[in-house]
Length: 354
Ligand code: V47
Image: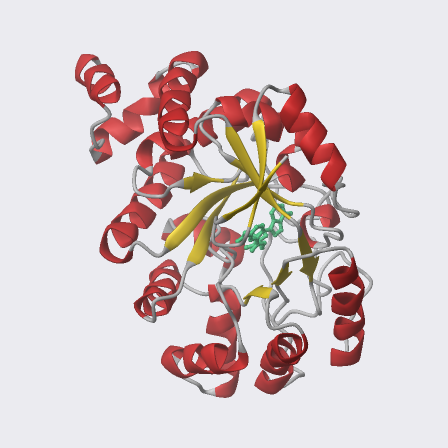
């Protein structure tokens, strides 16, 4: 424990063993070191962007037990949007100053790879400055399996059709045993990492998520972070790490695990301390409430994600995020917490200080 504290004090890289030992520290000790690191990197700035989430279909070939969004399971309302419907949403959101569309779909086997990709080209043709963050590694793996395309071919098409960056979804928890229990058949951990590596090798950036608070143990979260840290050492392509708190309504997982505020804040603080090579830690307000996401800014996080406008995946599981949030709410909350609100673009360039 003594060497761990000395290393934290000196801001040295933590070994695997030391990373696991972080759980033995209390929240306020973790918070002290995590906040020191976040302040060194970002001062009092809290980042967010003005974005729109679009989830074009919920019809899914996969059967992940944690998911309430997939229409195969307890969600009784299957839907599928046409490109015209998606463009109507984009046209509307542009009027409100949106600078990023975040497009994540279920794995719909009754469509074509063109349906997935052409929408990106339509958006870029009409709005060349709109940042398209689209296709999780899980979707890329699905397109590869369904349409017999190699990962490289899917990635070439993404570049050709105008995808700017990749969202971090589909990572869930990398531990293979847990993965088998919660999302058997979906992209493997190894392939999730391989796909991001291939994307980074094209000079492109992406995010990384971690779904926690279901049946995994704390040690699995550390294992997850360390696998990301290893890849980031090789490529430097991850913009942000996003721990997603599992929303339990309408799911097929039975668990007694309680994920309270202390556990969420500890996970954020540990992420900041372990992931010494990922600059941005997002407290994704949709899965931890805006209030706790604000508190998380004192425990290592430096970002809140965006205004979102409409959110269908986490809200299907019980999160109060279906209507997004207002820019003014963000700005007021950040200011009243004595931080500085910074609107950023999708790659963390600063656009405006409020
Ligand atoms: O991979 C599904 C998660 C992810 C639930 O890159 C759930 O900026 C909680 O990719 N409770 C997709 N989480 C969302 C995603 C994302 C979200 C926010 C920011 C970014 C980014 C990417 O949603 C899935 C899965 O892990 N998810 N169901 C649920 N009930």
